[in-house]
Length: 320
Image (cartoon, rainbow, N blue to C red; front, side, top):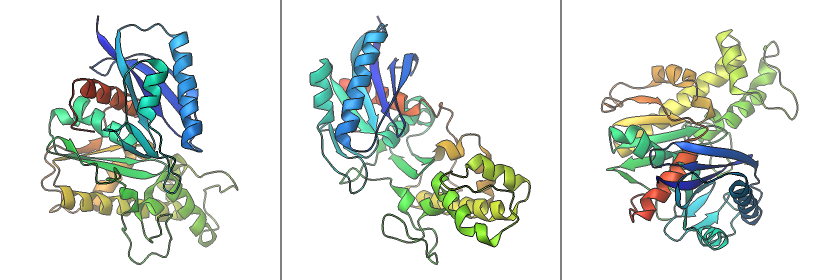
C-alpha cells in the first residue's frame, strides 16, 4: 500500500485538506471555512476540519502523518506556530497538539515555505537547487533556495520581501513602518490602494471604484489593455516595482531560476509585461528560466505540506 500524508493548508478564507502521495497526487480533498483572527481560534478550526475530513473520507493509503502549512512565522524543528501576523503572537506548539489529538505525527511550516518546498521537490527543483520563489497575491513574499536549502533566517522570517523598498522617494507608508515598500505598489491590495489614491486625478477612468469593494487585478488588466490612463499608471508602477524586487533578489542570492506564484501571477500576463523592465546584465545567469509555477496554485501549499511530512518522516530536515 502506498504511503500517504494528510496535508493541511490554512489560508485566509479556507482550510484545504487532502490525502497526498509522495508524487504529489491528491487522492481526495475538501475545503472548510477558516479564520486567521488569532492562532487559538485558527487551531480549533483546523482540528474541527481534520476531524470532519477523517469522518467523511476513507483513507486510501498507508497514512504516515500530517503535514501542515499555516500563515505567519513557524519554527518547524520545534513544531511551534510562533506568530500569525506581525504584532499578533500567541506561540502554540501546534504540531504536538495535532499529534496528541489525532495520534499521528505532525509537521508544520509557513505557507510560502511550503510552496517553495513543493517547487523544490515537484517543480523547478528537478532542474536546479538554486532558485527564488516569489508569491504575489494579496501580499508579497518570497523564499530563496540556495544549494538545495531553504533560507529560513534566525527568527524564521527570511523571505518577507514585500517590505523591500523599491521607491526611495515614495511617501506611502507601509505597515512595517517604512516607506516605498514593493507590497504597497504591486500586491493585489497595493494596486487597489494605488488606484483609489490616484483616482481623483483621472475623473474619466473606466474603472469603477466603490466603497468597501476592491478593484481586482483582472479589472485593472482590462482597463490597461483599453489604454485607460489610471490603470496604466497603477499597473506600470507595479510592473516596475516587481522588476526592481526581482533584480534585487537576483543580485543577493544568485539563483538560476525565478518562479512566480500567487493570484496576480497566475495567467502569466503580469510576468510577460514585467520582463520588459528587467536589465539584461542583471538577469544573465538566470539560465533555468523565469516563469510562473507549473504547479496548480490552488494546491501548491497543500503539496508542500505533504512533501514536508514525507521528508521529516525520513529524518531529512533540509527545509526545517
